Length: 296
Image (cartoon, rainbow, N blue to C red; front, side, top):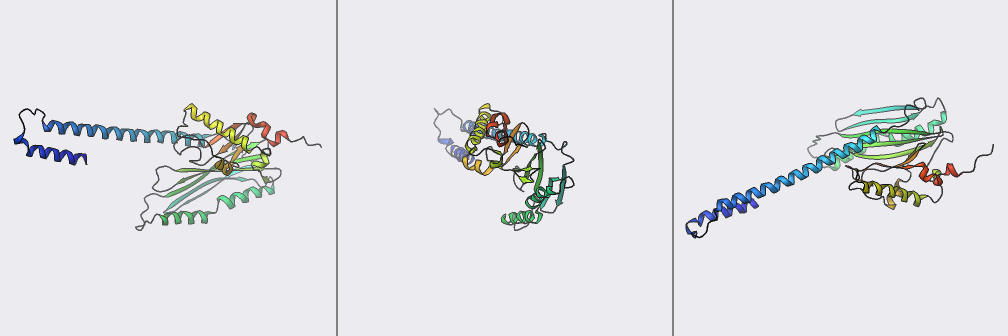
């Protein structure tokens, strides 16, 4: 629109050139040149700003993802107990690439409780395929042109607490064709190796601990935001999201770590996927430290 207006001004100036007053010293061509130069300068500034922001976001997302993938766990120490199994399937429209834990039933046949849970909840391949195909149909791609394959990737980290409890975080990377970034979703599973049962928030924490844990998590988030290190654009956890994710934690000998999906406490391009709480900070809220000793 600015270019069109400039052209009209220029043409009108030519048409009126014969009638121009001798006292008028400004050359219309000079005016046009200044306007075009300003416009180019403004456009260049905008493009540079957008490119710079995109590069920064790509960099911080890469750091965030790398921290997740390179985090140390107890796989090596647990290699006799835990077998890493894989499933891979590649089709025209999608790729499924799963890596998941499987407890050695030769050690204890009742570990089948855990293995069946993983199979039923994460290895229902037919259900996943149907969901992907339904999503494709919703795109109204009448020409059936699929430039990129959807990808569903599952991997995991596993931790062991005093040979009694295993904690698993399954992180699911979903890449949807046409999307700029992949998204991450998390499920945490805690399993008592002796009781052959799953452990949830109310089993692990003292009754009435929800509000205190919620406050501790938000305190850590606020400290991260104030530090300015990779926490820009993040926000505090809401009460509703805490209730939805309170069972999404893993445990080792030193920390309790709560995991949150993309865009629950931070956008996908910055921040963190998890909040680590030192055991020493919340020891008074943990049942195993407050239960009376068993009398043999």
